[in-house]
Image 1 (tube, helix red, strand yellow):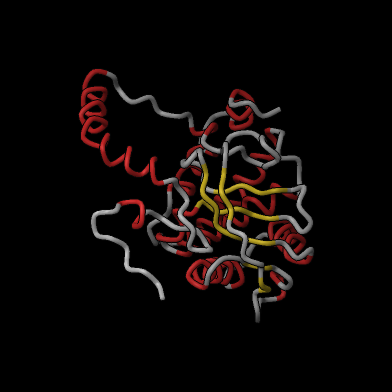
Image 2 (cartoon, rainbow, N blue to C red; image 1 turned 60 degrees about the horizontal axis):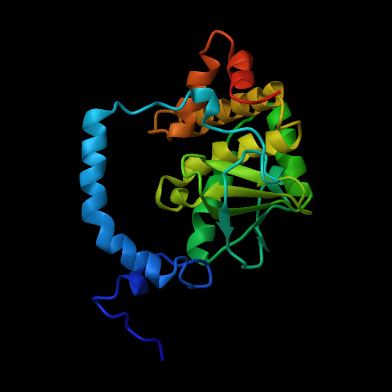
Length: 241
């Protein structure tokens, strides 16, 4: 019989992963609860004294690192077995999604948006290649929380990891991320040219899928990068070759 979490035990109410296991140790949760008032006061004081430093738009998707197309620092991925996306369109035939049913539903909706959109042939071909190899799309928690998504190119099949915060946003925001990473997987993610090609694909899907709908920050970042006088130079300055 499942036990009801004690109302005064914050650890029992902390976020859980795909297998319903606590992602953080009890001591860490309790310490956070104790230190929250101190942290809030320090943050307010720091904000007053120091102006926030904006991350350059070209650096918001870092160069490859840690075996990923965009470095996200440490990350946590669930262990559930991927399942094939049934009734996928021709372009996405063979693609898999992973996670609980609650995880898979927004992923399905995001992928369906790609099927329902007319894409440039070069972008559609990269997505189709990713799907044909049995590519997997799933959520993950990133240490670098501002990065929207990344991919593991050495996996067989390749895996696209979408920041877990997109579980709680418009599912259509996932479509541009998958397009970005599929294009990046088909090129060289370490080069400024490869990163720029992926950002162009992301911007195209943002425009065609979302239309007049509210877009995520990734779409805004892609547009801002492409509006720079020399996007490739900005990407090289951010660490790409």
